[in-house]
Length: 127
Image (cartoon, rainbow, N blue to C red; front, side, top):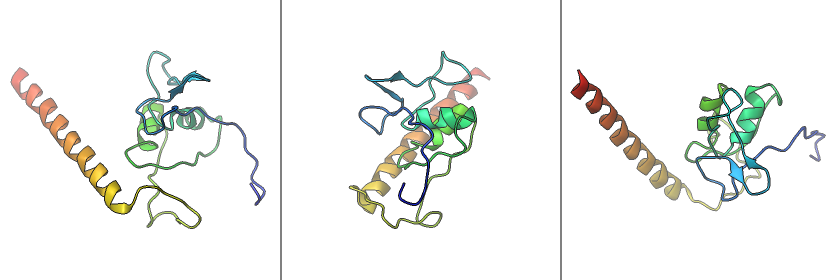
């Protein structure tokens, strides 16, 4: 803001942050702009909905377990996980150390592999 940025809008986030949906008691649930019966995902779902409908040219956020990438995939836009090799961490603050993030991501990856194997096995059973 002190560099001349002009905020366009504020988007919806979940009250507890780090959730798989983007809803709170103040603004309600952020819905998928292409199908209101579906979720836009979370936790940056409000932002992804704005970007995917060209309501905002770009959105900024953090992503530990898919908070940017998941809503972007649901909304039909692109999301890039900010990492030290892609973006600068200067001025950033985190309450999770690198080891904690690695363990958290590893557990998500293992769960994803387990789920994918279940889906593949179910398709094999039907063939």
